[in-house]
Amino acid sequence: MLTLQFIPYGEIEKLREEDKLKKLLHLVKEEKIVLMEGKLKSEEKSDLISRTMAEISAKFRGIEIEELDLEKKNPELLQRIRAMFINLLLGQRRGFTIIGPASVIKEIKKDPDKIQLFTTDEAKRKR
Image (cartoon, rainbow, N blue to C red; front, top):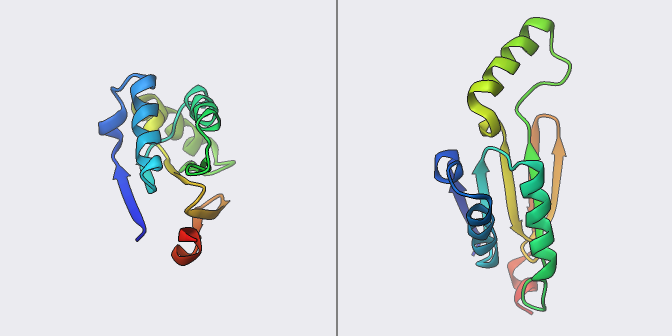
C-alpha cells in the first residue's frame, strides 16, 4: 500500500535542522512519501542527502527528492516586487517538497508548474 504523509510548514518550521532531518528520514524509512509544505534550505537538503547516503543498505536504497517553487519565472517588475515582499513574510513556506524512498519512487518529473510522481509496482518491490 502506498502511504502519503502531508507535513504542514507549521509542523517543521521551528524544529532545529537536526530534528527536521531526523523526522523526514524516519518517515521515508517507513516507506512513506512525504508531501511537505515549503522547501528545505539548500544546506538542509545537502545534509539530508548526505545522511541518506550514509544509511543506504539492502533494505533502505535511498531517497528521491524534488521541490516545486511556486514563483513564476521572469515575472514583470510589479510581480517581482510583490514576490520579494511575500518571500520576506513567508520565507521557506513558498513551495512544495516531495521526499520518498527510492524503493517506492520510480521517477519524479518536474516542469515549472507541476511535479509528476511515478511509483514502482508494489508486487515487484516485495520480490
